Length: 99
Image (tube, rainbow, N blue to C red; front, side, top):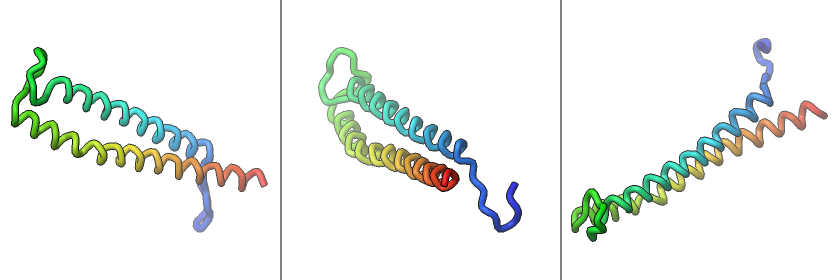
């Protein structure tokens, strides 16, 4: 551990954490897409023979959920950006240490 007032970092750990965050963002994106696929298959205005819920109220519900899709996409982008930022910080430390 560094003495008081000293800076310490573990670039390798930072890079791993950054990669994990970005992998989690990608995984979340897949989960969100799968959720929307399932919702649109199971819920809607018209009966398709396999819908769990259909009709006007189901249509309103699914439209409200679809309106939130952009919010989910932005959350994924924000999480990925946090990972990218941490990666950039770690890379800067690697370059600094190599100098």
